[in-house]
Length: 196
Image 1 (cartoon, rainbow, N blue to C red):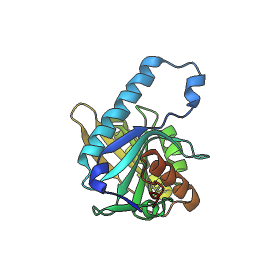
Image 2: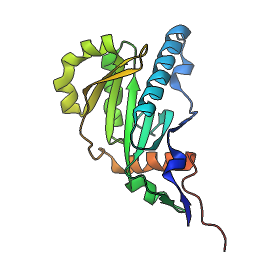
Image 3: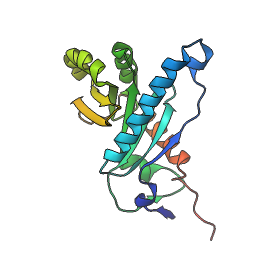
Image 4: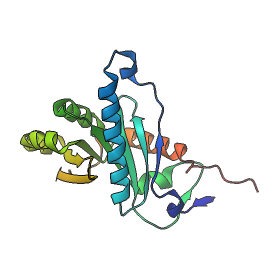
């Protein structure tokens, strides 16, 4: 069995280049670029703030549940992570978080983040602080949907957590396993054992 130290994997984020449905429609490129820059700035601030180690992905497609702007798999332990031909050791020792980021359209962000509750342990909407203050009026609905709301100030890199849902078992545990398996393979955490 191969063994990979979790310390070697700390703060790694990869882009999952999936066909993006928005690329098929005419868009205002400056708005899309601004949202992408906001998303990347949040990801950097989030990864820097993490006490636990993990791996993440941009534009992560969970088949049937949409494309999350960012996912983060946080390891439950800092000890060595044993990996084998399957991703089972990786699957059981992580918390999978999915994030949906928008600049203004908080209601659409909530709808998309709700879909992520089918495969993620936590699903969170991230908005600029001004938009998050408006969306805060929907905290009762967010609690019922098990979707979190965070604000992010891109200028100073500050994350404000208005509501973070408790870690729940996803609505579809098999979809969680598939998502974590995809992350596992992307980071080469599931290598076949060396020949004897």
